[in-house]
Length: 142
Image (cartoon, rainbow, N blue to C red; front, side, top):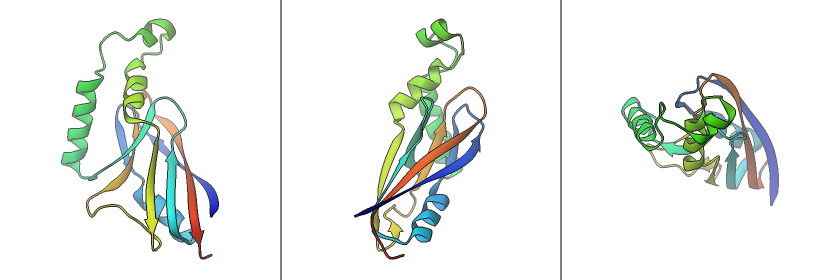
């Protein structure tokens, strides 16, 4: 088994910004020639998360609303009281979602469902540049 590590970098808006990473991840798999194995994705930092969803406006809106109900902005967070940066909600949201995701690869393709995409969620309270570490693991033909 071989392991190859890459980084996807993108600009985010914060405040539940959700971005589809599927095309970039698929391009890495194709470019590296990963035939069978998996791709492990990890977003460094304590205010971002990764998951899958049908990346269409209704499902994205529903996810944003659900996250707001779970860890709302505008309430007191001990993190904010200690550090004064106002992003306690972002830390809680990221902890609930998790910073990593692994997707199997078979015959050179992500094994996602028909309506399933890989997404990054940026929960922080300001725009930022995010990096997603991508480890391709398995059998390569190139």
